[in-house]
Length: 208
Image 1 (tube, rainbow, N blue to C red):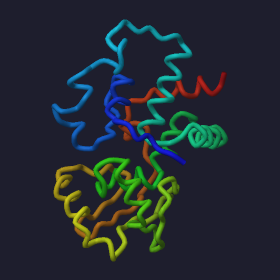
Image 2: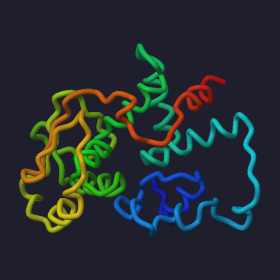
Image 3: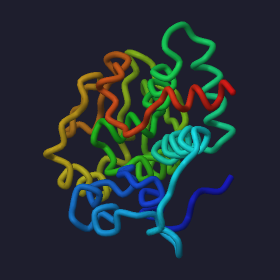
């Protein structure tokens, strides 16, 4: 399976919102959305008006790009959220936040979800003492996530912690940056998921 290999800042500009795909750069004045607050391309600065369907589609694309999942994967997450009891849109975001790459990013053990996916693919992380190299692995309450012992001495993790030492770990996770490990305490509530997505539009799109 392939991944998006072009400039990810174009994705943020396409959605006209920060998707935080480049980690710390997104918090600086170098952010492409700050410098060019219009979609890329020849007609990017033209007037855009979306239909109801267009608005729903943009929200779905925005969520897919934030979490780095393909359409087929995203549809499976939606079907699972729709099957469970509760608010479908909220459950959908909770499932996406429970992915191992997202949990590693939220714990501050990676500077972006993209970097988290790469580190997991390379076998640097374990869950409950067992090596996991699947970024889409769904964590559960009580799961302990840690950097593999043999990987802790790698310069990349020292650099990550040094650059993100001011990051506040979300309340639904625990993190020990000295030991390069953390734990899933509970399922996040909607107000704790700070992604610029209007999830009810995604539900309306798939309910057509």
